[in-house]
Each structure stands twice: as structure tokens, then as C-alpha cells.
Image 1: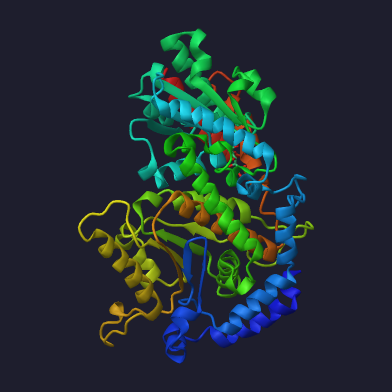
Image 2: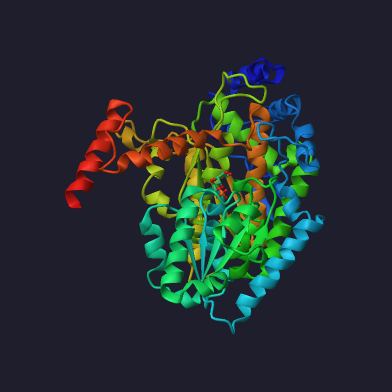
Length: 513
Ligand code: G6Q
């Protein structure tokens, strides 16, 4: 068990010696600290000096990673071993961008031809609606928003995920069916929400244009050809991927078709190159200079030794507004586990809660709690030296706030004794990730950074970061409950709370029908 490991015990002892030390003192003892605790790769500069660590901490955390076999696990992932043991699958998203896999390349070429045709114009399609959910939505929508600057402004992109009819209705409200292409993105092609929305899209097209043209308005992205056929989409209009691509690790597979149509094949390839650069770094750089390893180990440090239960991700770039939501799935679906790879229950905390909003907006809402609340919340600040939209001195204003926030959190400010409410105790840790500008390559590197940070955490916690059985039960129960919602059905069964709620819902529906 993890907590029995030598390096874990050494970290426990070390924690006792460091928990009282203030970042103010750590900085004054070591004037080089702000340059010493930094690392750089794939266009991302990481300053992790404002963490509650010393060189000894890093040494011990790396010893922990070694003892947990991180090195071998990285190799196993890149080799394509079936490290997703519960589903007996490889975890091979790195192949999507390695540039060496002929099947991946063949799909990319087909995507390029398709995206090229739409982008060339001449045809009727002006609107692209991606229908998918979870991993088949969050990546595409995040990437579209993040790379909007590079996108075709004469094309309209929409993303429908929720089974709430409002999502479909609002997304299509102002679109003309004859100009609209639906990308039905679903690895399994059986997901309830996606199938319901795809059916709604089919009806929407058919009622406006007739059955005959359906094929011109639908493409599928999936691993499940028979299901795609069953739905009525010709496999020639299907872009495939493989069972070794997990949903939340799929934005750079054919699931990224909407991204490619938006930003074009060249930018899409640049994004893949950014992913690849971070992959190579993760695989080859010594752990003490390895960005994902360092960030993953720091997450473990706060989660398991300081008892921090969340991590705030704070991008100072409006284009990254959906990045925290994307990361929530990546981190929490991956690390929200409580049994080890060998099936025993853990006796330590696993994945923390990831959350966040773009700066500076968050500063005017929840930062108060980070600065003066009772909880320790490690923060990841993400900033860029150049903006994509120069406007007066806005970029300096924005970045002055990034630097000011991490400084305020780390060093705090003493208040007069009579005004304790003005006290900033400081000693609140953060990472700062600084990049030149938000390009497709930077985005690829940033996503891969967090993917591999998650991998590092999972290796330490000895959990399977690649399954998601925790989402199953709710799906099963929803299927059972659905027929009970019919006012004409027999009295619902189950626990008294659920039966009562269903009863009220049925009564309200019956009264209005
Ligand atoms: C991601 C999860 C999950 C999945 C969705 C959609 O890792 O597996 O979020 O992406 O449930 O699944 P389909 O792509 O099969 O519709």
C-alpha cells in the first residue's frame, strides 16, 4: 500500500518540518528560488517556486514517483500495453499525435479532405453542429473556443450535448437546415443523450428538407461502425478512431473534426505537434525537469500531505474560458477512484476537485476565499506574454494581475492588530504557467501537460485513471425510472423520496395535459 512505502513515510516526516515554514522565509533564505524552481518544455514555462517546498521536498516526491514505478508506467503507456486493466485496453492517445501511426494518418487525411471541402465553400454548408457529450463534447467545445482566433468566421459552430431539449433548440434556433451539417460524435454510438439529440437533428432536417437529403447533412465520428449504420449514416461518411482512445483523451482524434473544420488542417497539425512535444518531454526528461511529473507530484503533495481537497485552474485568457470545465472531466473522471489497481480500497485521498474560471473575472468573485478563507487551495495560473487581440494596454493590465495574485497569495500582507480582517496571511501556493501566446501548438502542449500530470498522479495513487464505472449506476437507474414518469403508468416503486418526487412530477404533468 502507498502509505507503507519508504518514500511516503519520509514525506510524512518531511511534511512535519515544512508545514510551519512560510514562503516569505523560503524566498528570503534562497534568493535564487524564483529561477531555481522552474522548468520549461514545449513552449511552456513553469514557475513552481511559490510552492511550499524545498529542494528536499522535490527529491522526496521524485523518490516516491520512482518507488511507485512511474518510469515503467510511462513506458508501458507509450508502448501500448493494456494499462487500462479493467477494460483490458491500451491507453494510447499519444499515438494520435506521434506522427508514426499509418491508421491515424489515414483518418487525418480523410478529415483534411472533408474539412477542406467545407472550408473551400461553394457548397451549401455554413453551419457545423457537433452533437456529443462528455469526452465527445468537452474537448471539441474547449478547443473551438480556445482557438477561435484561428477559426473561419464565415462558418458557424455550435455544440449540442445536453439531453435537455433546450440545448438542441437554442443551438439550431437561427440556423437554416439546408446550410447545416451535424457531426454526430460518439465513440460507442449508443450514448442516450447523443442518440436522442441525433434523432432530433434528423427530424429537424427531414421535416424541412425531406428524407432524401439526410446523407448530405450528417457525418459520424465513432469507433462503432455497425451502430453508425444502424442509425442510418453511411460508413463512407464516418470518421473512425480506436478503443485505445479514451473519451476524455480524444480531442485530437477524429472527435476533433469540428476543430479541424474551424481552424483548418494546418493549424490542427500544429496542435498535434504541440501535444507531441509535451509527450516527448514527458517520456524523456528527467523527473526533476519534467513539467507533468512536477505538477502531478505537487498535486499529490497538497492533496495527501496538506489535506487540500481542490485545485483552482485560473487561465488569464478569455479564449480559455472552457478550459477549467474541460480539465474537470480530464482530472476528476480519471482520478475519482477509490480502489487500487489490485482492487483494494485506498486508505488515502485520491483525485482532488478541479475548478476555475478565467482571470481577472474570478478575482472579483471567489478569490476572496483563496486569499483569506480557511482552506488551502493550490492554484495554477496560466498566462501569455502576447495577446491575440492587442487593445491599448489591456495585456499589461491582465498580466500584472496574474503576477500580483500569485505574489499576494504567497507573501500576504500583515495588518494592524486592530484590523485583523485586513490580514493576508499568505503562504498560499501556486504554479504559474507562462507561454508566449495562445497558438494551436501551445494548446496541444497545455492539454498534454495536464493529461500527463493526471497520469503521474494515478501512478502514485495506484489507480486506473482510464475507466469511469462511476457513471454507470445513474444511467441504469434513469432507464428504470423513465417509464415510471408516465402519468398513466403503475404506481412508481423505490425509496420514499424518489417515489414522492416522481409522484409530484407526474401530478404536475397530468394537470397540464
Ligand atoms: C470519457 C467518458 C465519457 C464519454 C461520454 C460519451 O472519458 O468515457 O465522458 O466520452 O459518455 O461517450 P460516447 O463518445 O461513447 O458517446
